[in-house]
Each structure stands twice: as C-alpha cells, then as structure tokens.
Length: 100
Image 1 (cartoon, rainbow, N blue to C red):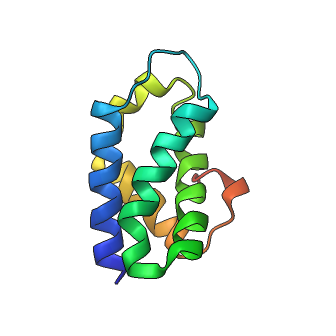
Image 2: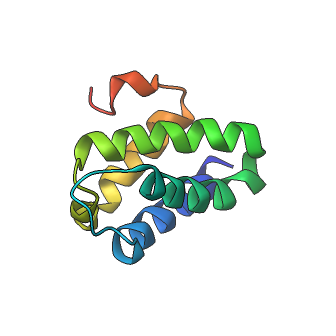
C-alpha cells in the first residue's frame, strides 16, 4: 500500500509543480486547495478520505516550507517527494517540516 501511495504522491507532486496555476509569489488558499484536491483524490483510494486528508496536509506543509513561492515547486525532485511521502506515511508530525 505504501508503494502505491508513494507513486501517487510522486505523480501528484510532479504534475502539480508543472501544471499548477501559480502566478503569485506565495501560497494562498486557492493554491493549497489545488494541491489538496489532487493529492486527496489520488491517495484516498488507498487509505480512505480522512487519512488521505491528513497525509496530504502533512506533505503540503513540507512542500510549502521547502518552496515558499509555489512557482519554485517546479524544482521539486522525485527524491524530495519520496522522502516527504515516507515521513508523512510514517506519521511524522506536520510541524517538523520534513527535515531531520
């Protein structure tokens, strides 16, 4: 199950960074909603809606911390997305921001 979710998140992250409507220099509610909607839609089949929302919120915190400007999310690497996904799947606190 983790592998399916991880692959889904990588796909979401990479498509999000390329296709997102990000013309502003900071994350706003609309940008967050696009990320969350795409992430939850892809993750919920493997873990249920509530868990997918928690998981995607965790990943979003990590993405925002690393890329304060959403336009820069295009620089997100597969390795970063994989690391964040694993941390969130393992239950790391959102407040830790994805760096150990």
